[in-house]
Length: 398
Image 1 (cartoon, rainbow, N blue to C red):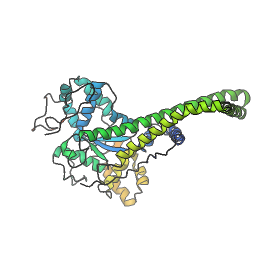
Image 2: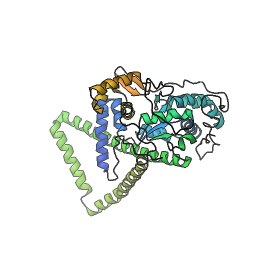
Image 3: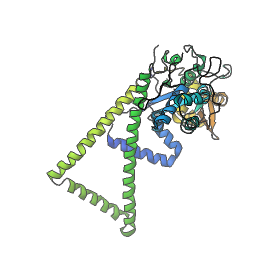
Image 4: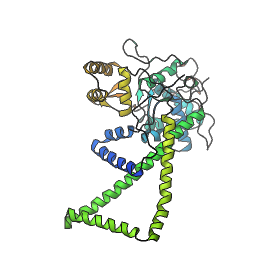
């Protein structure tokens, strides 16, 4: 099946992007964050999104079990926090997670309460749930999904197509075969590994920017204290002269310049290599979307694609950014109010799905779900035997 690239307005990471430019961008964006608050931070981070993902229940359960077992951070959550990935889940996956926490905990021999608390605190707080199941087709439009054999998996692809996602993260063979999910466990691990590489690079970049901000803040504080005695112009002039004299002293002799070059050369080399690795990892994901563009003319898709990237927005904001005319504005108002996938965010805002504060499905007391029970099949959320050096991986659905 042919997969075409979906353009999400992603900013490309150039391998030639300079360190100074990155720091400047961070400083300016941090200033915008302080002025705009939390919402501004979310919008800034989403500007560099690498992967827009619909995540299945089995991936959440396997990842959470691995966190409990190994006590290591989740690479999926790190990608979300670093702004490399945006993840949502269908209401079908949300209910499956609630049902399968107990079997997953028993299979991996971990505390069920600890697993459920981890999912509630860390995963649900970052991954909105989009209601897409059991929608009346005569009332609200949903994407057609003719190539998924298991009806319980259709909802994941519907959300992905509605939001113009780049992939569905799942270990389910019914989603692998049509190409919506990475074809093998190795391919899945490789894609998540690429996200982890970009996430680590971005976190390091933010740390450098934060350090620079701290230095600049300290300098400004010192100048402020000096200004009380000699005035602001004199204080800044003295600071500038002192900085120039220090630089001149460091570069005054050939020996000092050599020592400085010896110190900085490996650091700059490492920075350049880190940028090259991050750019390569980013291209590996951005240039290989698993989902094709669906209904680009559909207003529902345009609304959902904007909201999943930029977060909650008012109708006026959506009209302005999507350049909607008067007729489309009226249609958008109706869609936002009637389509279950769109939910209120505050008094005036709208979002694609919403954050849930708790799992709403009681855990199954069985080791596995039977075929007659609603939810995942008998081995979908179970993990293979755990080891200290290998993350748990789910078995293929039979």
